[in-house]
Image (cartoon, rainbow, N blue to C red; front, side, top):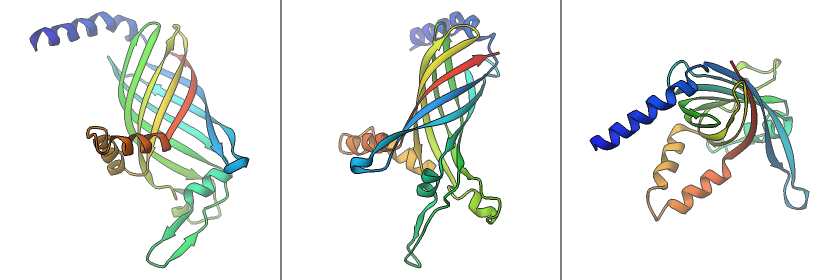
Length: 204
């Protein structure tokens, strides 16, 4: 155990000069999302804005905002009320899917790895609607993994974000990966909620 600890500390010390000069970053992302169904299924590209900051060492925090078309916002904000047995159609408005995450970043140029956990929220542009409708999506949870290449002042990366409706749902999915009986169910959950993105960033 002591040897492992010493090895980990040595790697951290050797890697520190590689990422100590980077404090924050901005970028743009592209996310392919399938829309429609059956023979009419097609891919729609979502544009995202990215901001990340690393205050010191390997700690990392980020905010990503994906521009969502009206059709996707309508699907995400539609809901069924079991008490009244009624279906409420979601708002057909443009909006944003905001992802707020914290975690770790390891940068040993040219390679960079991210692992984060956080929350997400849908914001709907509907100024004439009640305030409560604007955040109709409520708060969810997400787990993000990213791998990329850093070339000094710029870089590219591929990000996979598992978006869950609640933090408890995320925890249950992660627990499901441990057991052989529930592993396939957990993998299906992750696949259905996975949001892959290609990102280009500028570092400062």
